[in-house]
Amino acid sequence: MLRRPFPGFPHPLQMVGTMKLYYKAGACSLAPHIVLREAGETFEIEAVDLATKKTASGADFTALNPKGYIPALLLDDGSLLTEGAAISLYVAEKNPAAGLLPADALGRARVTEMLLFIATELHKSFSPLFNPSFDAAAKETAKGLLTRRLDFTEKLLADGRDYLVGGSFTPADAYLFTVLGWTGFVGIDLAGFTHLSAYRARIAARPAVQAALKAEGLI
Image (cartoon, rainbow, N blue to C red; front, side, top):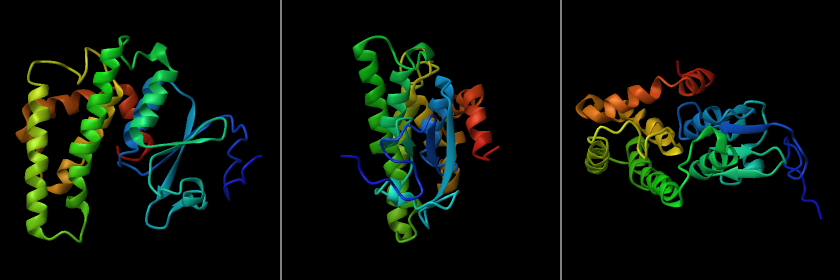
């Protein structure tokens, strides 16, 4: 039996032709956005107002994604995929010619390892710093934890590697680039992290990254 369609969206089992990424400019959805462009995928993007849960076209975002947050990727068969790391890995696996994942199982596991580290130890560490309900003391504690996690990541890049895993760009790099972009908003000067600063500049110069930033109105 077919499910009821999402109000304002294609039927979940209806072929929609082109994938669509629901995003907020500069948020964690930037990472899969970059991966989609690195993969050479054909897709559309639509902004979501997370305060009102409305998409740019006026649809109720929670009708599509009951989680209520981004990113969400509406696939070309009308089904939905959520969680940034899952979306990025799906896109990379779907486009092997783009070379976004290592060929060996351990290499792919290393990419997943880094994605999980970024999600649980870096990304989540920013949350208290953006939350107005946290007092100054709590934010200082959170900033200290985040700084230690950034120190660890700095050391990963201290051996001269250009990317987090292997010798080429992977979804982990898209995710780390994204979260590093938030440091200036929470009072952390990335200039104090020599290798991370150079890494972020290197990733920012990639054509697909520039295209994603431009599409989201960030440059």
